[in-house]
Length: 96
Image (cartoon, rainbow, N blue to C red; front, top):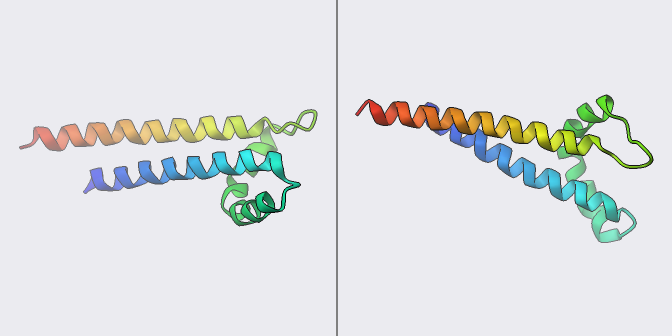
């Protein structure tokens, strides 16, 4: 049961990471209407998380370096849950 919960969290963080990368890449094309439509859909999902890091690292020279920190933190969290999942799977396998 714990392995299933951990696997779900890992998958959620993985998908959220992809959504975050798409949002960040599309921010380079804000002038394009097609990009604006996608950004307006993704912003409510990603901006609350990104705003945490924007308050730590403000944009420098028009470049938002906080996105790099946000992706690194998300990857760290995903790896922690992934290692916990591996330990839980090993523990349940060893009990058979």
